[in-house]
Image 1 (cartoon, rainbow, N blue to C red):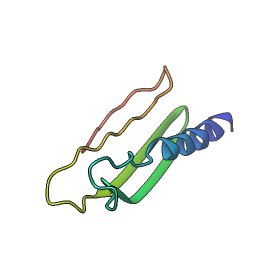
Image 2: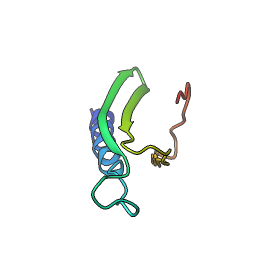
Image 3: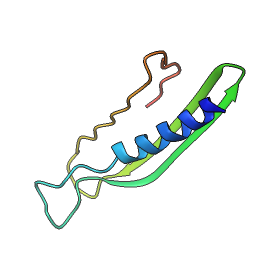
Image 4: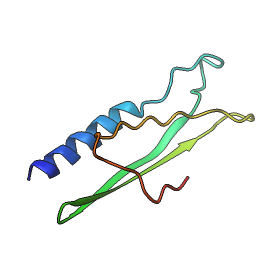
Amino acid sequence: MPMLRQLLLFSFALLLCLEPLPSTGHPQIPELTMTSFSVRSTIVSRYASTRVRTELSNPHAEAKEAIFDLDLPSSAFISNFTM
């Protein structure tokens, strides 16, 4: 059960970290808008698999940069990364 609690806290912390950056170029139009965010975790034995899916919308004609910052526990690793 402690692992499930840790995953829930991790998911909540991830949600807080993914807030859009403040707009600097166009005060009336946000830089990027998060349109979808989901976290799905499954635990089998001692292995946890977590899938994070985020969709952003760019209302501007030019490309904008998005920063995705994810803190992992020291014993965790990433596999099957897709973007």
